[in-house]
Structure formats: structure tokens, C-alpha cells
Length: 223
Image 1 (tube, rainbow, N blue to C red):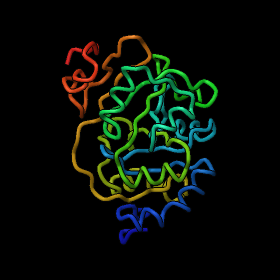
Image 2: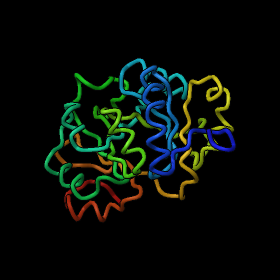
Image 3: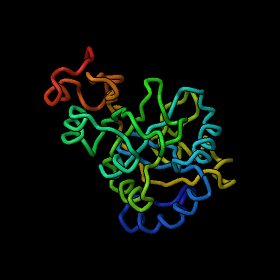
């Protein structure tokens, strides 16, 4: 734990390496993980149905509101059976890793239906957070992700905010908290629906739509 007793240190490369064994064991038991990303702190876990159900229950997630998947390399897309169209591949080649979330079709045999959004796809982002990349690579599978906050509260920017709001779950061992320090304020990831012939911006964010259109000129979206 940190000096404040609020989490497992997850800042320097040695700290990241030292956290991995315990984190993998926690995830193997369907535990929920709290961790830093390139945008905000997130909650997540393994992609099996039991782990997803536990995360849904803890967050009181309404039906039809899925989580996204964080990956550490493009090979995970193929392994999950997700489909990258030519236009989606162009965006991925330019903006991944980074704050771009692509909603992809496919994955019916590998991904829990609870992770599928209303447009029928699976939201995926190749994280640019170095420590998280290392952890996901050690897992060998994607990590589910949703903002680490209570409903209606701002997204957490440091481990202390999570410890204050979720102290009972952390103390009981339901949540394992990785302390990656204070994050810099940033916009959320830009989200693009890639399940149709013409790609469509679902949520503007950290990457301006004007930059995305340099790679995909017919991208649908009004910003």
C-alpha cells in the first residue's frame, strides 16, 4: 500500500512490475480493479461473464450501457474476433495508442453480450498509459473499463478520491486500487462507431474530429 494506505503503488516501472502478480490473482478471482488511464481513473476487470457481472453490480450499471475494452496491442482485436474495416484501420494506425475509442462489430464467440452497446458493437481503445499497457500484456486479454466514480459524481483523478468513495469495497478486497498518482485534467476519448459502412462520431473528445477526417474524410459527425 502507499504511505497513505490508499492503494498499491503503480507509478514507476518497478512499482508496475511489483504490482502485476497480485493484480492478476485478484482478476482471476473476478475482482474489480481501480486503475489510472491516459484520461481518468477507471474501474474494470477480466472479460469473462462472472467478472463483468460483478462490475455491473458494483457500479449499478443500467442494462444497455456497456463498458469499453482496453487493449495493449492490435493482435488482441484479431484474437477477440472483432472486425476492423479499412476506414477503422486507418484511424487505428494513426491515433492508437491514444484517446480514441472505436466501436467494432464481431466478437460474438469471445466477448460477453453485456459488453455490447446499443449499436451492436464492442467499444475498444488501445491505451497509451505505459503501466496499463504492461498490465494488459501480462493478462493476455483486454481489461474492461468504466469511470471510477459514484453515479453523478465527477470522474476520479487520483487514488485518494476512489479510496474516499469506495472505502468499504477496498477494505473488503472487492476492489484492488492501483495508485498511479494525480492525473492531468483531460477530455474523454473520442468515440467513433465503426459498425456501419460510413463511420460516425458518437462522442467528440480528446482527438478533434477535424483530425480524424484527415484520415477518413467521409466521417459522419457535426463537430
